[in-house]
Image (cartoon, rainbow, N blue to C red):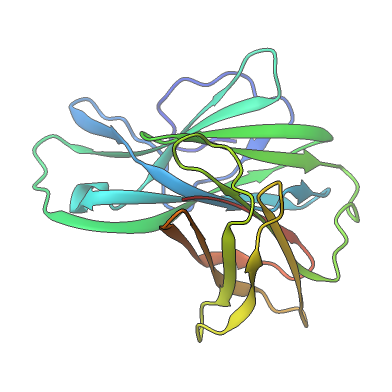
Length: 233
């Protein structure tokens, strides 16, 4: 179920989308609509029955009017794909102050059903794809801890970057949990043993003199759930 969406979207089969964590597009007459640039996403790529997909999108803003991101969602007819666009909307007469920063907007999806789903996140600068596998089986996801699956991609081409440097840190105290190089497919995997506690974290990636940090405070990575991160540098 969508709440507060104004852009047109098609039937969503079994998907039910809960309210966006930072609101949904209102689209009032006279509003300014700005598609925001993105540089990383994080999500639980395996979703069992009764669980929720948390699609976290890191976006950039350049003014106070752009600080709060909302989502526009459209089903792609004849596929199991969904277009997701992070936008800022605000009244045309609202005073905006210049300020640069990044933040996370989160889309929650319930009843994802059986089979693969793709969420194509369209920023103003690039598109990043979240590949999700759903199941109605409650015990579909079984991990011993928090399983980080990191893929580093080139921000200009979207291609994987073999050998990219990756670091995973605990946000609370900046403690380094894992540090190494991505494999030939741009992947870096790490499983953190956990005692039932969730984890706010930072994923840093670097290649060819460029770096990027994904900072996830909430919703944190969950114990026993795989956390897939796509980060572009």
